[in-house]
Image (cartoon, rainbow, N blue to C red):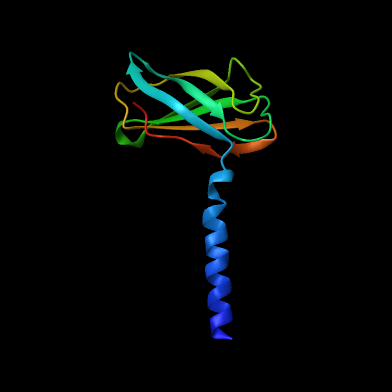
Length: 124
C-alpha cells in the first residue's frame, strides 16, 4: 500500500511539473523599465504562446521606489487581440513622485481574467 501511495505521489508530481510549460499563455520577449523626471516608462514586446487567441489585452505595471513608495498604471496593447504566435509591442507610462526605481513588476490581463499567466524575465 505504501508503494502504491509513493508511486501515485511521484506520478502526480511528475504530471504537475510536465504540465507547467503549457500553463503560460504569454511570454515577454523583452522589456525595459526606465525612470525619468516625474515618471517611469516601461516598454517591450510580448508573444502569445498559447494555442488560442487572446483578446482585449492590457499591460499592467507597478513601480516600487524608495521607502516602498508605489505607483501603478495599465494600458491597452496597440494590437489588443493576439493570435497564437503573434508578437505585439507595449508601452506603459507611470507618473511618480520619486526619481529612482527599486523594482518594476509587469503582468498582463483582460476584462475576463484578473491576470494572464505570463513568462516575464527581468527587465533590461
